[in-house]
Amino acid sequence: MDRYARWLVTEGRQAGGIGPAERHRIDRRHLGDSLLFASQLPRDLSTVWDLGSGVGLPGIPLGICLPASQFVLIDRSGRRCDLMRRALRILELPNCQVQQADITDLTGTADAIVARASLSPHELGDVVSTHLDRGGRAVVAGSWQERPEFSGWTTVEIPADALDQTIWLLIMRRE
Image 1 (cartoon, rainbow, N blue to C red):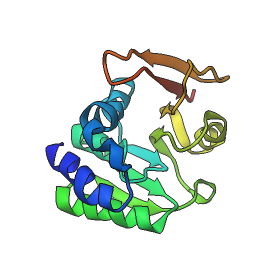
Image 2: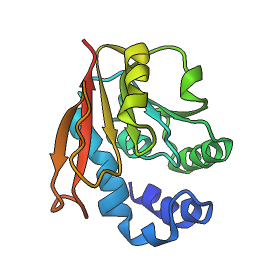
Image 3: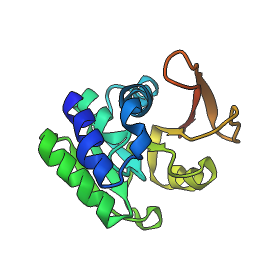
Image 4: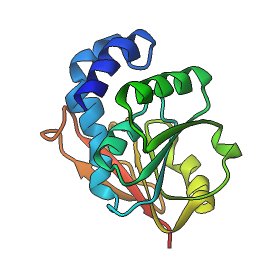
């Protein structure tokens, strides 16, 4: 995880993957925030899709912590996909792969779907109903200032003392 944090604050930041002011918030905000997704995911996952992965958040930290699961880091930006491929080569993380695609072009299914500040829960609802395996789970985080409530999603609050601000995770299970 330390190697990924160093990559984020150097090459990732220089390439615009995170903002210049985010350098001092890598652990408590970006990595810590990403690892909270694991608290809502079963440990026996086969395939996890990270939609709108950007520079690999939350997919790369989750891939480090859940090495038995396969992660597909999906983003429509070629530049971001190139950045993620570079990070994965540096980290030698064999359970993660990068796919450049728009969510409307996705095929197949996954045991879990995660997204961090990339798509609204409304947009993800259709993706979940189409691409999440039965019994699977979707976990979404956003930049909400107040507790979000969306039909079909369960809200889990993570208090500010755990990270540098209160965040909420939205959980959807596909029956």
